[in-house]
Amino acid sequence: MIYCVEDERNIRELIVYTLESSGYSARGFESGKELYKNLEQKLPELILLDIMLPGEDGMEILSRLKNSEVTRDIPVIMVTAKGAEYDKVLGLDCGADDYITKPFGMMEFIARVRAVLRRTGKEDKNQAILEHGKLQIMVLQHQVLVDGKKIVLTLKEFELLKYLMENQGIVLSRDSLLGHVWGYDFDGETRTVDVHVRTLRQKLGACGELIETVRGVGYRIGD
Image (cartoon, rainbow, N blue to C red; front, side, top):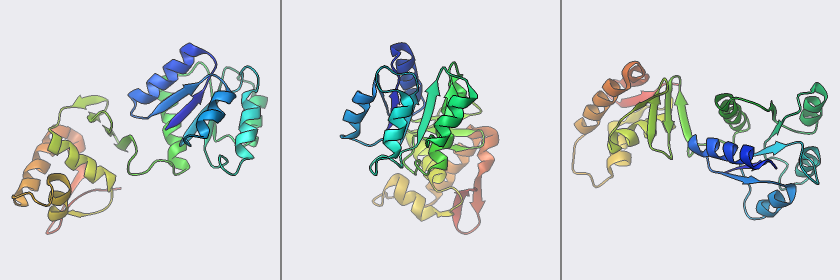
């Protein structure tokens, strides 16, 4: 979950929409008061915080977050129209993890969000987006992209690719893949995995080479 504190409704809704379109869960608030109320219910993985807010401004909210044992470890990206170096330095000195100035491109915005989540260890195997080079899996949308182009996969092909991507660098045996993707009560054989890997490689084009065969064992996607 990502929280966005932004008093301008259009910008707030655009940020939330962009995050959700990229596979993240997000909620928007127009003030620190709303943020604090929701922090009591659920702690997010990241907070996007505007500086220019009515009442308590973003710097004051940031200071309060970082001085609380409950919220001090939540990463914060400052989002503001201010571009002065002083504001950027002040925000970072107060504990912000990154700083992005409006107006900004949405691709850059999502890249910065993803980088902070990765750097702070807030993305795990249940993350909304799995990536390797030009290959992306939008987990919540059940979409696979190669160099930005959507690839149509069957459900089993998707689950197989997702499992391999979640375990990058780990060799997964055919039995392990069968058990996870098809279920332990599946009355099939390991050749089923080989057939699906072959079709996956064909559909992924150049990214199909990411799926490595480990002779006598199974498959993996390298680090």
